Image (cartoon, rainbow, N blue to C red):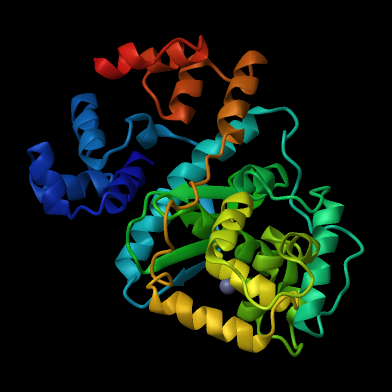
Length: 360
Ligand SMILES: [Zn+2]
């Protein structure tokens, strides 16, 4: 078991056999023997291996194995096979901690993910997607207001959201089914940590679209990618809110208006321009004029002024403390799942100032 985990940790760290050997001070063949299970590393060696791979030693012993089934990458060709494998391993390591925590509860604290009942079976046009999104929001009691934290909202509904450290520009999202050894399954969506918040949110909403719409679009007239983009826009900024905030009929829009709405709803300015057209607030020609100006300013590459803050999921951290309070997990397990040293964990648990710890 340790053998395979060493290999996974090495691949996730993007290290070759010899690169890892060099850092640990042994030959690449010695590493290979560890990975094949021919030799078991001493605890001193394990500590060195963990440091070199950027994991905690517990990683090598973790018993909750998670498998990613039907992984679907959203990526460019530049994001090759090796990068995909390394990323999958990183995502699995994060998913394992979460599923171990959920497994410690006698009853899952989250819902089992399921599309709301009674939704239409077929989508004939893009306007149907807007109505569909409103029905989904209603069924999940989200109302028509901005969704403050999409990550926590989706996780409460039973979707596993993994925010992973991946800087490769070719990566734009991953969906999969995470399966545990004891047969639990969760739909999983991964987005990159470094993206602006509006991009993370649009990707999450788009992937939610795939989960809810895939079967409803099969053999229909709509392109699945376009339908999921439409769903993402509608889910983040419902038509009724768009019309209320922009007005029913406009000649044009002000940039500052779009900027403020971006920050209220966590949907990009470009996304708001599209929503204005989709909800018939502006005409097709007004839209095209605005898009041309928007591009000329270089805003398609990077939108102006402050970016929308990244998602800051709190649900899992909160569940760690809930599990701790009910004695489902130990203090050391809590610190391990949170990925922080014991000392810092004690301070955080007591809500003590962390400045002293940070200075050390
Ligand atoms: Zn898609």
